[in-house]
Image (cartoon, rainbow over all chains, first blue to last red; front, side, top):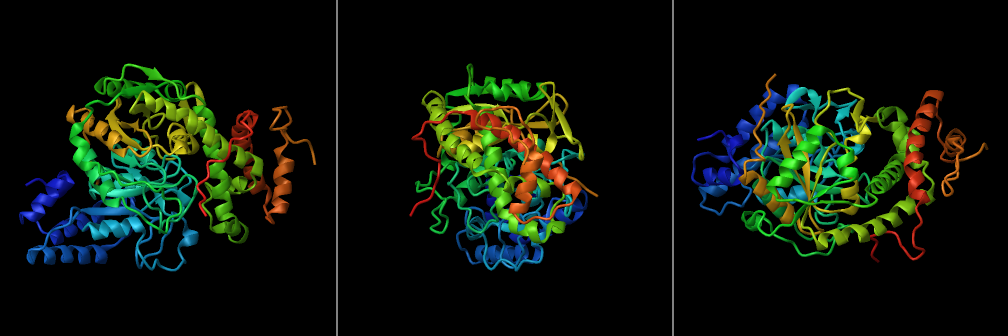
Length: 466
Length: 70
């Protein structure tokens, strides 16, 4: 039998059902691997050992009694440390939260996964407050990229990406306000799903920008991503931002692949602000999905600006009281950025929110002709840790703010996206966004699955040892 | 206060230092010179982003993309 981390969720489920492996064995192996790898990677801020062993014992008892195993039984996972976990402090990457009381209940998504049998191994590192794209955290350390440990894993869900890429868990949860699932998925060479805005409950997560925050899964293949996404769908009456939409099961639709999918490449802004590796990756995916036409998303650059203004303003306001009282406890890399955001004139913020409406009306017409739009997830592959500048389109750009410049217009629209990794000529991965119409997560997951069937997308684990 | 850049007409003044100093007082913040300078750098970056956005004419009936439901 292959080692557990090389199996998909379905394969591991089958191995558990047939008695080839027990949940307790999976849990112990997972915890051992984390213990060996994490001193180098720094993906975890906290390992929930006792909880994981408890959840494993429960699954083993259920199996021994002949009970039906739930779909995610004994699947190891971990969550970005901005989702509440019962009995643990939610840090949101910020040491100023470290003396907060522990969470009394699980976040809605964590509770759904627990009810489906998944085993929580721990909570993951991130950029402080989810404000950044590099997971270079002054208080909790930098998370290293398993594909090359001298490089960033991306952010803000950097721990979530690194844990999956290193094979420590089958999937993780991240959050995406401006690209924080898609950017680290791109740089760490895994798949990430940012669902439609309002699709998945955010209850029990530390908010950053209420107008833009999404929760979503990260994994090594489309089937795993789809199964986890399906498990997290459902109505949460306590989340005022959740949309009143019926759930759409995706897993059983995957094998339809690209059948009938009309794909096009996003040009203009998206092809201007990326390097040659990203352009080559777009061409490969376009060929595989038979996307022969390039289309424009008008005003994409303005959309990025509007997302930037909304983020700065809501994020700044969120932390203003603590910026007044305990500024010394803030992440120095983002403290003044938050303060500047709190000073934004209301007219700019309202203009950005009104423009969001106009932009949505313009862009939705594209989906009358197309089911999937293709664009790079990041302007380039992973940069070296501490590298402040990336040079794109003959322009020097600040790394921390610019790695998400191609994801921001898409999350501003709230569209569902799967980021799939392609290996570039340099050997480093880069992600491609497969963007679908609102509420059609099934379409971008099918496109990702089709690329796997063609052998273009294939994720291996990169084990890291001390 | 010194001139502030006119964000609707896109004219040229760029003294965000005066604006951020005033906001520092309005928001009850106490910054040293180094932090004040960094706030200015960050605010100027946001202002640069906001300029074309504020220059964009929007239909007078266009409402915000809100989600509030009573």
